[in-house]
Length: 139
Image (tube, rainbow, N blue to C red; front, side, top):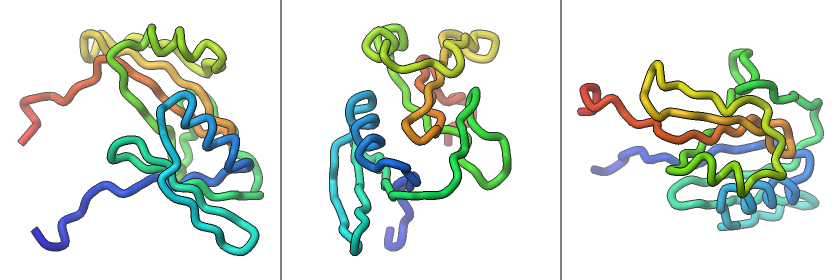
């Protein structure tokens, strides 16, 4: 269908683009897909499958990530990734400081567990296991 929409990317403002790029490469398997130099700044696109992150250098005030992210309107609460083995991920990512969890959501969906970290810029990143769609709602 002509003009059909598809997912593109999430853009992140970064204090240190290089540090943020390394974080998402090391822990989440993103790879550099493109770099655009604009004068004395650079925009970096990272890709993992169909998911892209666009990294911009920024110099504004910090917004610290807490729990599962800031709750004020107009801000991203968190980025989320899924795994089939949360404990295995936690073993590999032992160097990351957990900001919340792991929490168990069996009361809502058996086997659903999540943990939260923050990236170098304070963006909250969730990793969960066991979440899936409610098949009665899927068209």
